[in-house]
Structures are given as structure tokens and as C-alpha cells.
Image (cartoon, rainbow, N blue to C red; front, side, top):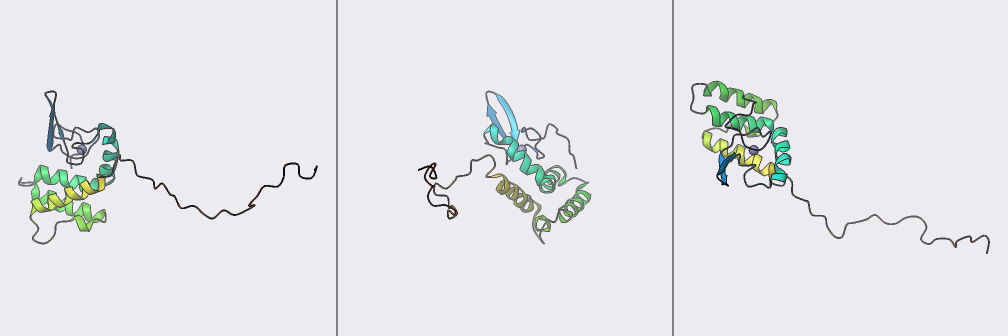
Length: 147
Ligand SMILES: [Zn+2]
């Protein structure tokens, strides 16, 4: 696994994925991963934290994109399966007869789902349930003993 950022890396700082979707604004082109693409810049770090928390899936995606179809693929493939099982994500290993491209899409969708809500303000209900009030129901008269 290549842990370092390279020219193939997503343009978001610290992102473990490859940049596979490009933006062209002001003549400059940045390549982003599907999870960072079209995000407000202020949300990038929150997305990166989630991607790094699920590094075993992100690493699998990166390795598939980098090594599928190369001579190293057989070894890399075994390494991905092993890493996912060790991370207790056997559900993310390749299924029987699942094409590699479909597996890659499934992994990318999993990360996309995990990062969808990143950086978004969660709505707070206007009527919050509160506990029943216990204790005195009225205040004693001020300096009551004097009167
Ligand atoms: Zn990214």
C-alpha cells in the first residue's frame, strides 16, 4: 500500500484516496476522490477524518485502482482481502463471481455513504422532549420569616 500523497492523490489535504474526478475552475485543474468532489472546502477535513477512520476500505479502493490489471494484482488482491477481514469488514471483501469493477463500486459507495453527512449541521427538533420537573413548584415568600 502506498501511504504517501502523490500526484495521483485526491487534492483534499490528507485524503487517502486517489483523485479520480476533476474540477476545472479558473484554469486550474484539481483531481478529487468521489467523497471530496463538489464539497464545500470547509467540509473537507471532516470527510478526510471519516476516510482515515475507514482506512482499510480506502486502502482497498486505492490498491484496486492502482494495481488491478498489473502483474502485482494477485498479491495485492490477497492483501486487500486479508486487511478487510482483519478489520472485521468481511462484508467488504469480494463476493463470489463479483466482477472487480462492481466490487470497486460497492467499496466506493460504502465510503460515499459514510461521508455523506460530513460537515452538515444536524437539525435540532424545535420541540425537545424534556424530563418532568421535580422539586418545589413555587418559591417561598422572600424573607418570609420576617413578615
Ligand atoms: Zn478525497
